[in-house]
Image (cartoon, rainbow, N blue to C red; front, side, top):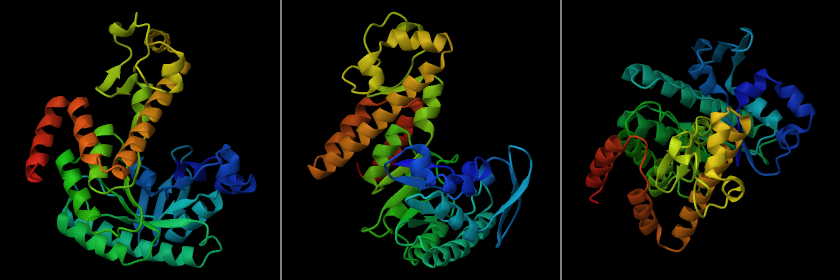
Length: 336
């Protein structure tokens, strides 16, 4: 599945342009499923916000400073015109560390917007071929998360997302909130954890019952020369790869590893050739997709716990000291 950003598409080339050109599938030449976000996160995260109230959010374009407004109704209509298969409610995002009352107000507004989004979508001619997902908010406060989960799951969305995580809280907090919410979500509908994409977090959060993820991490770190391997990330710009005739990861079936040596990637990054960024992105995306496929197969074959332990024993995230301390705390809390 490909996630497309409704905020950026709204500003350029414009929703009407994409619609006239046949929708995102034809516009991109992508035959697979597409999910669009509402654009709300970018409004808050890019410093473009001007005003927020129950009617929606007013913001300035980061491109030219022009002023725009997203309402719950418009967020649904925009994503409908883009032609995505899965679309998201407009929600209010809050920075990590905000006071509890501020988080509560944003959560309650998210609930009101969710109801409006649901009614708007149900009344549209796209309700039968586009799945609308609701979003649970509430920050790092367990009582707010419990309340939000109860209210959002009270609306019969096609699936449910957990928002507002991986924004600065510890991994332990993220896992605890994810488990709390996932335990209360319907078992017969997709559970989507937004903005999480590091390999170790994918494994742990699948353990907690999450089905869907999205994150820019695999391509963002690839553009900086970081490539995923079963042992953790490696920095392809380090001198040790200069003479390496084999691939970055032995046995990897991605185009990059099947076609080029690590030494060639080292050269591309050192020479600042754009091809290096693309080849590294291809490898990281394939690594993540293969990991998810392996997790699915392990679940079907009733050997998930074994695969999880083998992966986490071998994989070393960037900050190993922090990771180990958090892992031990997490396993102790779970009795593992």
